[in-house]
Image (tube, rainbow, N blue to C red; front, side, top):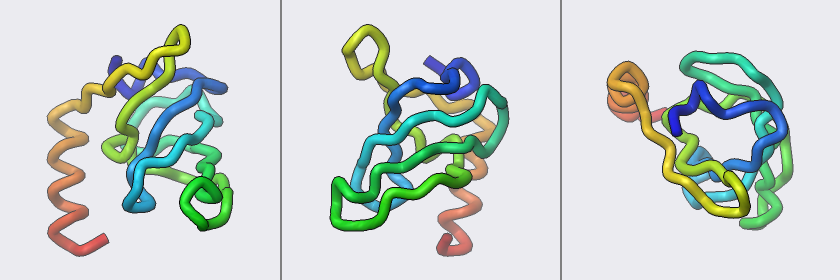
Length: 87
């Protein structure tokens, strides 16, 4: 599944906190960033809602099974660029 196919309310796993945690997709938009309610409390941080890079979305739950997310070439390039600047 591609990130643009993930709909509002779907459960996802994100890697932007360093350790994968679950989150809930909060928008139906497409693009390089998505609005996610991230469950940081799973790893001792705070739960919060905000923008997450699409390349930080690792998997999505569909029919009670976790499916790996496919990233576009554009998203992969952005991930490299962000890493280059140390974000």
